[in-house]
Amino acid sequence: MIIKTKSPEETFEVGVKIGRLLKKGDIISLNGDLGAGKTHLTKGIAKGIEVDEYITSPTFTLVNEYTGRIPLYHFDVYRINDIEELYEIGFDEYIYGDGVSVIEWGDIIKEILPDNIININIKKIDDNTREIHIDAKELDLGGLK
Ligand code: ADP
Ligand code: MG
Image 1 (cartoon, helix red, strand yellow):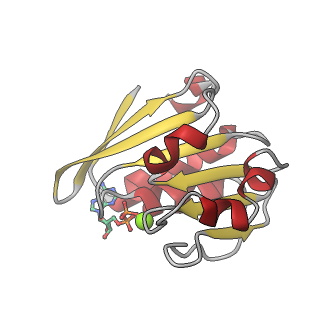
Image 2 (image 1 turned 90 degrees about the vertical axis):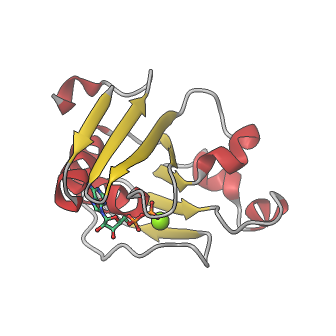
Image 3 (image 1 turned 45 degrees about the vertical axis):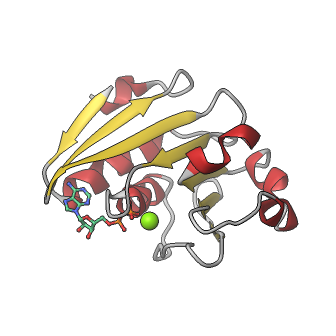
């Protein structure tokens, strides 16, 4: 499914709808160039999971944890040098745990992610236009329409 958005707010709203559909154990690999809107979409997803805290980019911390209807683990693996860094912070306990994992730049660590994950790719069309490509056998996207 491809959804076109024409503002950051619209991308946020797509995130909210996705967030509402997520269940514990779901893993989202979120890809797209720098400035595509990955963090923006994640803020919407957090709202859809009923997280009240302010979402900041985990670029330097690798992961931020939030409490909502279910826990949210927000990763950004752009800066990892070695997969080992992820195991040091207990990556498996997160992704096989009781929350939802959203992994910005997930393609970088594709080889250590399970197969049945939700792949989302954001393409920058112009300054304010984005195409959000959602590929998910696991997510019932009926609720998105
Ligand atoms: P990333 O995490 O992919 O690097 P961010 O979410 O941090 O990207 O930033 C996206 C930037 O693009 C923000 O400055 C946002 O205002 C801008 N933007 C413009 N149009 C859109 C859109 N349709 N959807 C999402 N972000 C948009
Ligand atoms: Mg980001």
